[in-house]
Image (tube, rainbow, N blue to C red; front, top):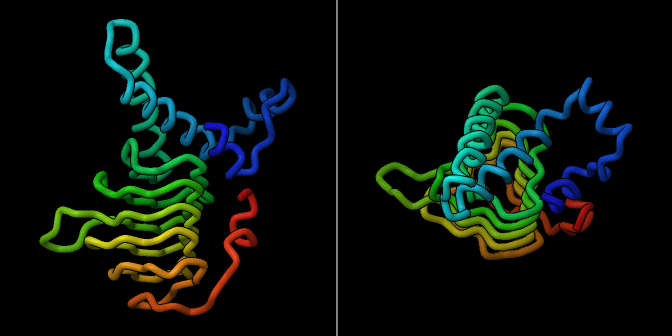
Length: 182
């Protein structure tokens, strides 16, 4: 949760910030915290003590996800997730996404027709609005996708920007400039 907070550029909570967030809540950060709590209790051994906590956080996670338009399953994203805007994000439960992923609205990550295998995406990935990533593919670390790109083939070249339909290499980039929290 600490890496998610840093990725979203949120300061450590103080009494003043907690009062402000009570009246003006940050819905995305609240969803991400609830997602991480639900993941924690989902992965923990179920006992009579932990089961009510899991049920509480799972129900909150589902309810907030529906309200915000996020269909993000548990245990898909690594630490450092940054959801930038409220809007539709659909992720297949079989997908695996590494640490420090910055994801925008109208993004779909899923399977291709006739396949049950979803993409595996590396660390330090920037996914712009409208990107569709699908199929039995692997994407390496330190990659960025331009808006509305359609990715259906594996990518093995790091520090590059991909865009278009189908996605092709556009340019080389420095991911530390794009993901400033690295």
